[in-house]
Length: 288
Image (tube, rainbow, N blue to C red; front, top):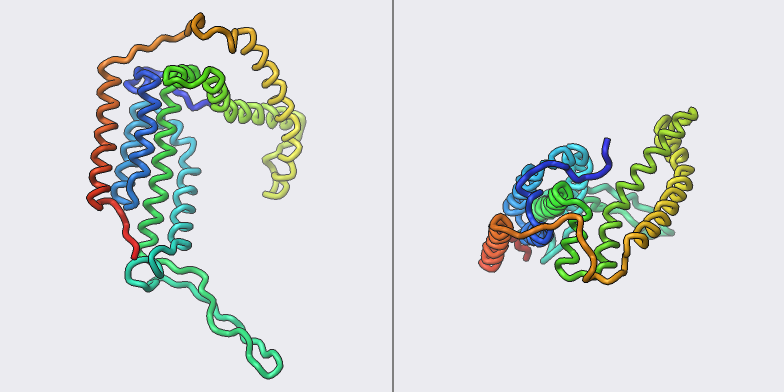
């Protein structure tokens, strides 16, 4: 199974210029983070899923849906329980959902100490709605990122950054950062397979036993990572990193066309429409 997210296929998103995809990703983030109401946030998530489907990255979504579900649930719970804005739990001033526990009363000399109730959880429809919206926003941003990574090679991403004016060293560093996680994941998988071939299965046993067995894997993984970093540095030097940029050539050439203009116009139109709705007071959960 490949640890890389890029999907090698032909799709409308794959054919777009890298600059178009970078700007579109930023505009997608703006759309996802614009509203604090669940309905427009769900619309942003739907838009991100459409983009991911157009990029052919639904397989990446199937690989990461458990993480997204856990993130959605935990974000909703955290915002629902700990949100305190504009008074007790927003409009209405009362918490319809309260979880309390009694406190024991202790006598200190002739005076009672303690007693009463301890409020463990307070929530209301306002805080739950806000928590759902925050969770939808985060998940939508991640799905937009999956769509971008599913349709953009790392080399094309670096080319897009250089086209936007980023220094060559910055673009190379960012592209290497995108390679780091899948490279380390692949290295860890190879080390685990080597351990299994020698009769040690790090995934066997209970939770704490598995944690203890995974700790020794850190050393070989880091050793492979350092060796790979040294080889990468030599490869970059041999390919002229830091040489005169006017004499550099590119393996892949891109030319912006009508599809790029249409995609940017559509995303910019959605951002403008969202800003107008936000200024009109729509798509916002109020507190006070």
